[in-house]
Amino acid sequence: MLDRLGSLVIGAFAWLGSVSIFAGRVLLAAVRPPWELGEIVRHVYEIGWRSLPLIGLSGFAIGVVLSMHTRASLERFGAESLIPAGLAIALIRETGPLTTGLLVSGRVGAGIGAEIGAMKVTEQIDALEALAVDPLKFLAVTRIIALPILTAVMDFCGIVGGYAAEAAVSGMSWTLYFRRAFSLVEYQDFIPATLKTAVFGMLIGTLASYLGFTTTQGTEGVGRAATRSVVFSSIAIIVVNVLLVRVIFFLFPARA
Image 1 (cartoon, helix red, strand yellow):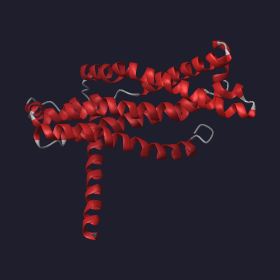
Image 2 (cartoon, rainbow, N blue to C red):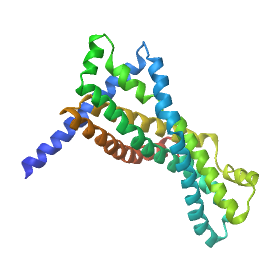
Image 3 (cartoon, rainbow, N blue to C red):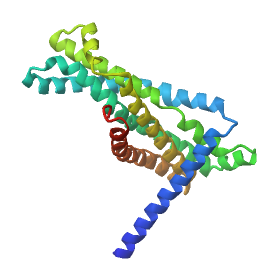
Image 4 (cartoon, rainbow, N blue to C red):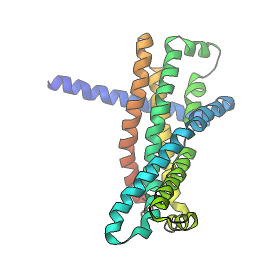
C-alpha cells in the first residue's frame, strides 16, 4: 500500500515537472521572434470572439441571480441601495474572472487538447518539424495569447443582468443603478482581476497543449486528452485562484 502511494506521489510530481518544463519552453517561444501573427489572430477569433455569446449570456444570468440573492440578504438590514455596488464588486473582483476561466476551460480546453492530440497521433506535428516549423510556437503559443477581454465582457453583462433584475423589482433607473454600481469601484480594482484572468488563460492553454502534445494510443488517446484538458484546467484554475487571492491580498491589500 505504501509503495503504491509512494509511486503515485512520485508520478504526480514527475507529471508536474514535465508540465512546468513545457510551460517554460512555451514562455521562451512566446517572447522569441518570429511570431505566428496569422495563427494568433485566428485563435483570438476562435477562442475569444466565438466565446462571447457564451460568456455574455452566462454573465447576464449570473448578474440576475446575484442581484436576487443580494437583495434577499440586504433587505433585512434596509440596505437595498448597496445592491448595485455589492454586485459590481463581487463580479469584478472574483466571480467574473473565475467564472470566465471555468467556462473557457470547458469550451476551449477540450478543443485544444483534441486538435493537437489528433495532429500528434496522425504525425502532423512531425510533418511541421520536417518543414522547419517550430510546433511549440505554431500550435501552443498561438492558442495561449487570447483571454482577458472576455472577463470584461462577463463583468459588463453581469452588471446589466443585475440591473434588469433590480429594475423589475424596484423600478430603479439605468443611470442611478450604474452610478451606485461604480460608486465603490475604482480603476485599480480591475488590475488584480485582469492579472488573474491572464494566469487562467495561460493555465488553460498550457495544460491543454501539453496533453495534446503527449497524446498516445490513437483516437482513444485524443478523446482522453480532450477530457483531461477540461478536468485538469478546471482543477488548476480553482486551486491557483486560491493562491492568487492570497497574493493579491498581499500586493493589493485594499483591492483583493
